[in-house]
Amino acid sequence: DFHEDPNELSDIRHVIAVVSGKGGVGKSLVTGLLSVAMARKGKHVGIMDADITGPSIPKMFGTTGEVRGTSAGAYPVTTAGGIDIVSMNLLLENSTDPVVWRGPVISGVVKQFWHDFIWQDVDYMFVDMPPGTGDVPLTVMQTIRLDGIVIVTSPQELVSMIVEKAVKMAEAMKVPILGLVENMSYFECPDCGKRHEIYGKSHVEEVAAQYGLDVLGRIPIKPELAAQCDAGQIETVEGNYLSEAAAKILELDK
Ligand code: ADP
Ligand code: MG
Image (cartoon, rainbow, N blue to C red):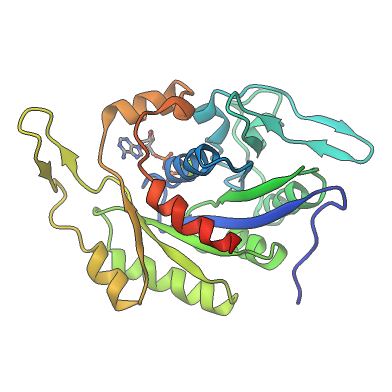
C-alpha cells in the first residue's frame, strides 16, 4: 500500500473525495452540502479544500479565521457549525490574490494539508477536488487512502464521458465510487410547483445504470441557494438536499 499516513496527531476515520469533469458544475456546493448533511447527522466533519487555485469552501461557510500552528503542526479553522476546514484561502494573507504556482508546487500543498495539519477526531473528511483528472486529483488519490469518491455532474455536460473518465481513474487507483450527484438538475417553478428540466432531459439515471452506480441525489437550480452560499450561510440552508446521500455514506461506519 503506497498511501501515506496523515499527521501522527491526526485522527481521521473516513475520507471521501468529491470530483467533477469541469469547473462550475457545483462541486464545491455539493461538498459543502454533503458536509452539512453529515454534520446534521451528528458527525464531526472536516473539509480539505484541495482546489488550491480556486478555493471556495471558506467563503461558502463564512469562515475567515486564521490558521494557527505549533511546532507539531497546523490546525484547521472551525466553522460556526463545528466543521473543520483547511483551504489555501485561509493561508493567503490576501485571499483575493491569485495562486499562480505550477502543478508540482500545488500538489505539494495538498500533501501538506494531509501531513502538516492536525485533524482532530474527524469522522468524515470531504476533499473538494479541483475539476478534472489532472495532477492534483492524482496526488490526492495516491497520498490519501480514500473510502470512496462522489462524482458531481450537471445536465449541461456530456455526463457519460465524465463518468467514464472518473470510473477509469477510480479503477486505476482502486477507489470505490459511492455514486453520482446531479446538480442543477431541474428548476422547481415557484408558481406552478412543477419540476422543469430546463437543460433538457437528465441522463444521469441512464448513465449511472450503465456503470452500475447509484444516483445519490439531485439538486435543483435554486438562486436562493447560490445567494446563501455567497453570503457564507451554507450551514443554515433549510432543507436537506443530500440527506439520502449522507445516509448512504454513513453505511461506511458499518
Ligand atoms: P465548482 O466547485 O464545480 O466550480 P461551485 O460549487 O463553486 O462550482 O458552483 C459554481 C457557482 O454556481 C456558484 O456561484 C454556486 O453558488 C452556483 N451554483 C451551484 N449549484 C447551484 C444550484 N443548484 N443552484 C443555484 N446556483 C448554484
Ligand atoms: Mg469549486
